[in-house]
Image (cartoon, rainbow, N blue to C red; front, top):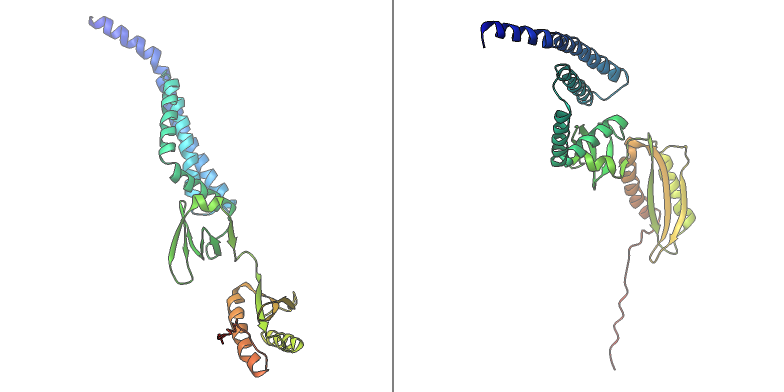
Length: 271
């Protein structure tokens, strides 16, 4: 091949591929600018929509990643590269990675769902997956809780997002329930009046809904009263423990008995 042939071949290739290369470069530059603009717009939209700050980087990253993959495929297609096989290989690789990381991806999806729908937030007290505690951190893969005795519990978001859960912090008020027993033969009206007085003296117990006191059970060793009072959620345990102590101390001074299970044993001697 002489010099003239080389020049002719180079000229032909330049004429054939030159416009495609220039177009691909232009699409890459313009497309890159558009991807950045869309990414910034999505970030602003998510911010205005009240999306959780810890979720925003992941959502914007996914959007940018998908747009960049589409841009690369478009540019390679403009250069005449067959993309069918490339897309098939990319899909197979994605499937393999997805199967290998199925548990991790489940936790990731669970974290996204929790951050979007917000069944609980940081500071809420929840009961989930057999644990009760205050939520201290919501990560994309795990939720971290602190138990009342200051243990750290790390719960994967996959199971947390698909199972039942109790959120004790959703409502401003909670109902406190007691079962208070008196002995058979004690004055039931007097016991009811004492319980009523003790509850009325506690300013933390709300007047609306009103206090409920009723005989709920004639048990083996006691006559049981069901006592139900409404309090602010933050006062729940304080009111619960305080009334238990007040009932114990006051019933004794009022001549009311708090019964406990007893067993009489009769011994018979053979004659």
